[in-house]
Length: 205
Length: 142
Image (tube, rainbow over all chains, first blue to last red; front, top):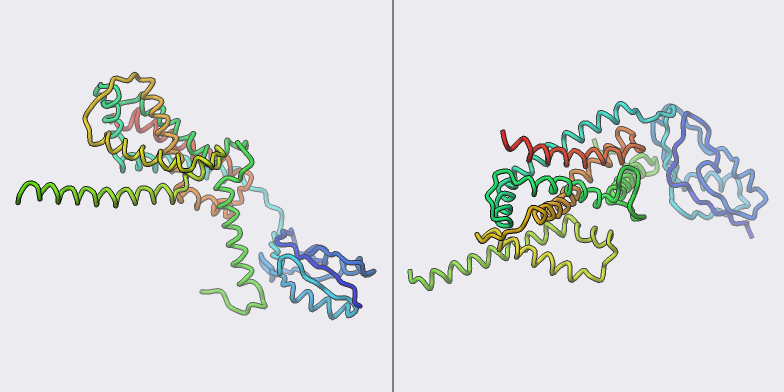
């Protein structure tokens, strides 16, 4: 009976520069066969400039290649059916200047949107009325109500996102982290479909 | 038209309007997911029904406040607590709005600022606080 080789493709990987990929770079192997080391170091794919940024290696092609070279082994695939390889020409570190620019943009942008929101729902009038109802005094600028309101606004957002700078309040992932994960998942699904040469559907123009 | 019939029509219109607005309001709160988020944070799932009742009573109380003209004589401390509670609720509402949730993953990918994500979140939080204080202390007086 042929020896079983279990193959688990890595889901996502990032490499820097153009290089040759060995089987162990893109997949985990488990087997009792004596050829394990030979299998692990088997060159699978050479990344060149024309691969651009993303290559999808489909497990089908890899198994076909392996079946051809190792006729005495039986290959079983477990895990994801393909590996997504993202190629960077050189390691780029995030720019602090850009981050500062985005910070200012977000700061001014959210300050303006909250002001527009307050006008939209006539919050000034509602605050004046609620101040009158609760204290019995007419006040044009009910700041005793409005300043605590403003800080509460920030506290509510922190609670929702479960974060104070890099410190988190408990183990749960915040909605933002879930959203970033979902977005990444959608992108992956897209490239798996359209960058895979085995699915010969061209991307929509 | 006889006055009784008039009142009856008014009653039906009012009731129907209330039904529509109430349904819409609950749908709005549900879509934004503030209640599940609060339950998650406080780990108080068994009290879900109590929270639902709270929302209902709160809405009714708010309706009462907006249609009445009575006044109480509470001090500014009470008003401050009231303000901070409104702020927290509104803050969660603003945070839950999809604009923030959808913009972030894109910024995160495009500019490659994985490490600074939480700092950028703080930009949004401080922006909201600063915008709000600026509006009440200075902007509305101009």
